[in-house]
Amino acid sequence: MTRRGKGAEKRAASYLESKGHHLVERNYFCYRGEVDLITFDEDFLVFVEVKKRGKGSYLTPEESITRKKKERLIKCSKRWIMDNDYSGNSRFDVVALSGGEIRHYENAIQL
Amino acid sequence: MISKSLSGAVTGIDAIIVEVQCDVSRGLPSFKIVGLPEKEVQESRDRIRSAIDNSGFQFPTKKITANLAPADVKKQGVGLDLPIAATILQATGSLSEGALKNKLLIGELSLDGGLRSVSGVLPVVLSARDNPEVDSIIVPEGNAKEAAIVESLDVHPVSSLREAFDQLEKEEGADLATFSFDRDKYFQSRRDFVKDFSDVKGQEGAKRALEIAAAGGHNVLMSGPPGSGKSMLAKRLPTILPPLTFEEAIEVTKIYSILGKLSSDDPLVIKRKVRSPHHTISYAGMVGGGHGNPTPGEISLAHNGVLFLDELPEFNRRVLETLRQPLEDQEITISRASNSFRFPANFTLVGAMNPCPCGYLGDPVKKCTCRPHEIRRYRKKISGPFMDRIDIFVDVQRLEKEELTERSEGQSSATIRKRVSKGRKAQAHRFDRDDFTNSLMSSEQVEKYCQLNESAESLVKQAIDRYGFSARAYHKVLKISRTIADLDGSENISPEHVSEAIQYRSTRDKLLQEEGV
Figure 1 (cartoon, each protein chain N blue to C red):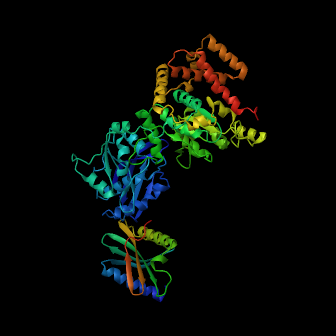
Figure 2 (cartoon, rainbow over the protein chains, first blue to last red; figure 1 turned 60 degrees about the vertical axis):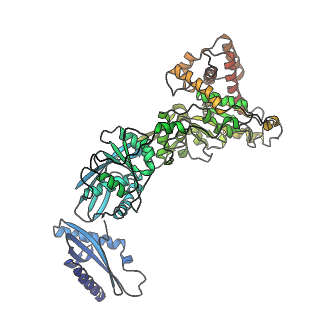
Figure 3 (cartoon, helix red, strand yellow; figure 1 turned 135 degrees about the vertical axis):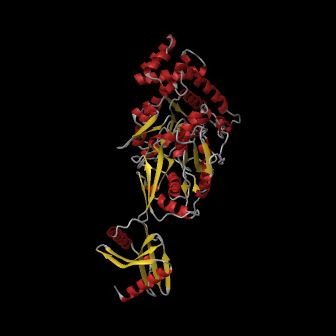
């Protein structure tokens, strides 16, 4: 994890907390991939993918989430749900940081 | 929570009633459709998601499974969009319980939540009529008339998902906006043809041949130089056929409905159709077929009407050969590994050809420029067995200048149709069936109904000697004589009837044999 990546995740986490999310876990790793943030938003368990792109980047952060990344995220979230015996609602969010802006997409990824 | 609604999907020529079940449960958000959905039904997921969001509801962030029962039949058609969306709304609690009871929903959603008309509504409604669970049906506005043709069901046309929701939410007993229209009046109102037989100058011989063909359901082949009026005559054949009965019109409309060829203003095919496919047509286009569930082809579109094949020898031979079974059975069976589909194809075949590739063989003025082997090859393109299924052969000659410049009008279609109807009535009386014609008689029936007196008998015998008629040709001559006698209003077949019939048959030899080459 790069220094910049860590900074981005921190910013995303504090942003989500300000919106009422409760942080459950940061950087959950499994052998299939990783989930940047796991939070609770009301009765939803939220798996958050944080993407940052610096100034002058060719792609926006939203564009740089590939199908492969999505698959990894989904597989990893299933792992977490199994390990923690979770049986409630859940969804995937994306937080995009570019320049000074933060954009939050609820329910951005579906199976 | 699980919710259910009813819809329909077309398979072959009929529709099955589909029960759409929907389960919305906790879990990772996903939306799946199971129950053998074809590509367009799979894609409905994205339409439904946007339509729900854009109609003032929220698409649930849950695990959604929609099942289309019976799950072992392939589901085609975008009409399933609306029922799937409605079950999702009910399963998430937006739509109250019981709102979908005894209702059949059909319609394609657009992304903004609007409802678009779909093809194949009539077969679905016909199946729904026989299903005790359905007592009303919600359709897109454009399909309202088509759905209302079947009278025993309440039809509620809606223009959007929101409007469908409002209709479904109305309390029981409250009057839903029901659509109705006077189908009998409509059916009677639009039967007049634009074209008429009086448009065609001269060609009395060919007109007479078509009159006989119309009366007895005989297939016709016309041969003549370009511009002699073959196409004009063929296109006017439906104007002298007896008008479609309501049941026949429904049969034809079903086919047009499945292929999406109905307009919202003209929900019923009232006139007999002429189909004139181009000679480059593929065999699937001709008899029906295609991926997944096969769709009807040109011969089914010509059901209860006329199939006109212009430039007959130019058609692919394989395409012409596939016509042999439908010409015999009045229907076509298309078999797939999973199922076989039967499409009706009761049509009168009218073929047109030139006497030779350049078209002017036998013409008194223009000279034919073809070589003998070219003519031979041209004529050989049509196989013997195919020719055997054609009863009447006519030589359509170029008009003389007196006929061309003549101002007087020929007989109108209405006059001819009256005679044809009389001939058909005699047949209906004889066979005790409305849809049976002389051309369909079996050999036993020919023996029974086509008895000749002595002088007629001797005439046929002479013809057999002279033209070398086969048993089949002999029977064809008898059938045509029967039709001519029916047109004449005569119980017995007279020598005049027989001699006219022989003439239509003997023209075949003139058209096909290589003498004259």
